[in-house]
Image (cartoon, rainbow, N blue to C red):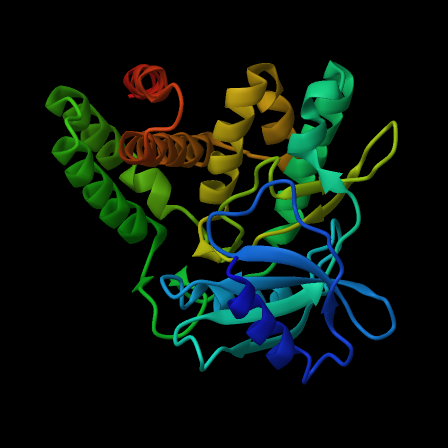
Amino acid sequence: MDAVVLAEVLALAGRDVPGLEADGWTPPVQGAVGHVVGVRDASGSPLLLKIYPVARPRRRDTEVLAQRLLAAVPGPRVPRPVAQGNVDRFPGVSFLVMTRRGGTRWADRRASMDAAGTTRLTREVGRALWGLHAVRGRWFGDLVDGGTRWPSAWAKAAARSDDLLDRYVRTDGPPELAGRIRRFVAGCQAALASCPGPVLCHNDVNDGNLLISATPDPRLSGIVDLERASWDDPLNDLAKTRLHVRHHRPVDTPALIEAYGVDGADAQRRLDAYEVLHALEERLWVAQDRPAGWRHSIDALEAFLAART
């Protein structure tokens, strides 16, 4: 983070939060959307300052609205917005000051946890997602005004499938596999159309965005990074988390689904269809960003897609 930008943001945020200053805390890993630093107010209360870049103008508004919508929902807590604003000196840059949740990222403790503890936390995540999905919406799509909206879960899934598959073929994805995926998703139309309505979805519930208590027997204590939240089919949210669990500990996927409470053939088919789309989207990201071991990751994802369709 540019020191000049940070100083300007601290000065602006300090108008609403007296005595605001950086306290030296930084997350183990910075997120893909905003830059986060630890701050404190005049009373010494720990807060977070998140700065959103020019390329992400709507993410701040989405995160604030999602935090407010979840303020009264029981279960693991999400940060609460304290102050927000735009940085006129750097057009397009915006910021959010929010409460700082206690605990550590699950990702930073996963390697040291035993199997029983991991399964227990996975069940907690399933129950937490079910609680989060208690917030109901009126359309499928963006939370904030002016975004894209769809009239049904099927309409949204079909548009997403078309977009992902077009990009997949353009990035040398095998046309035969693309055709299989397209037919599989189309075959799930009736199941996807059975979604009873949109709910608030986090869209990135993974161990990097889950906080756990700093105890020998950790429990889920918070959910962070809500800048990707939307109104959607709740099983789309659950499917992304299942794909994440499948990557780290496949034997725990039943624990996640049982804790959430997926019931009926149509619900299971919706879950499977969304997981295929998430895997396809991840394959596109890997092909574009090419992280370490990217060729192996592509092979593994395409094998998964072939097996599921």
